[in-house]
Image 1 (cartoon, rainbow, N blue to C red):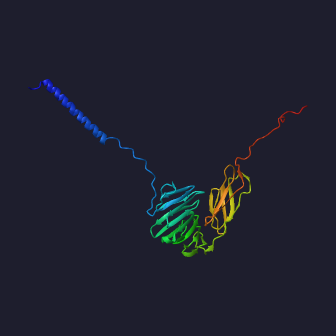
Image 2: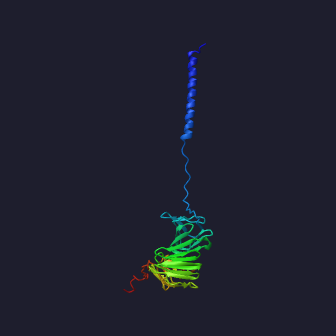
Image 3: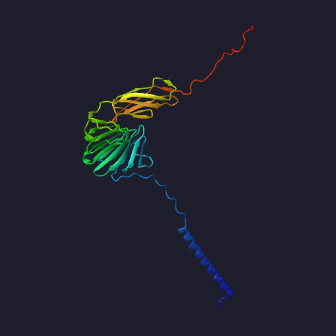
Amino acid sequence: MEPSPTTKRRGNLVFAAGVLLVVLAVAGGYYVLLWRPAPVPPPVAPPVLRSPQGVQVTRAAGAVQIRVGAGEWHEAVVGTAVEVGADLRTGEGGSAALSIPGTLDVEVAADAEVRLETLDDDQAALEVREGLVVADVKPESGRLLQIKAAGSDAVAATRDGRVHVLTDGKGNVQTAVTRGSATVTAGGEQVELENGFQTSIVPGGKPQAPTPMPKSLLLKIKWPPDSQTAKRRQLVTGKTNPGARVRVGGVVTTADANGQFRAVIELQEGSQKVRAYTLDVLGRVEQTTSQAIELDTRGPKNEIKTHPNMWKRPAGE
């Protein structure tokens, strides 16, 4: 018996509804799988400076920063890896150390900057941009280390030495050896440095004949004579070991061949004490502080004091 037209229409409706439900389910699944919003990517971490030879920061005290090429400066911490072309710098009171275990240790004093120029199995090269850097090459490593000084053609080279290089980045360079030996080349001439000896180079000059390192570090300063002043800029002069670096307040300078130095400092309004310290090629430090100096650029207040009876007419007039 054939179904009635009404029954056929009902069946067709049920079938159509089923097909529609299937289509909607497929579309919903397609949307969920393919059109759902992409997940938000995690924040990108700062790039890690890597070196295949494993150069790392092993000490970072105070202000210590690192960068690659012309990139931005970032804080350096213990464990930061250093790649060829990276610069590391320290601020006032800061210090840092780099190391390849069993091969090379590098100490960076305060107010210094150094670049790792080259590094492979046979040799390494550093450039001291400013300040004091001490590099210790382990004799068993067989690696040649060259230490260059910015602003000069001076190069210290060693395979077994502990070499100190102090420079202002403007051609004044001091080099000393406290273990092993090193050669120092500048101006087309070369000198040999043995343990306990140092040499100095002036801008455009040649290495001086090696001399024994001084047994102590001198610091004498002539502070501004007045405890009160209206002059913001003040001249400070003094004497220390020849070639030593001196910081007076915010000014860093280098002592000349006679150990003389001068610095023009700027005082802050009010009372203050100015700190000075000197650093020699061995890393020795001497420091001193000025007496209290008061800067007053405002001058005295213009006040006119009068007697209360000044304008009264005397009796009888």
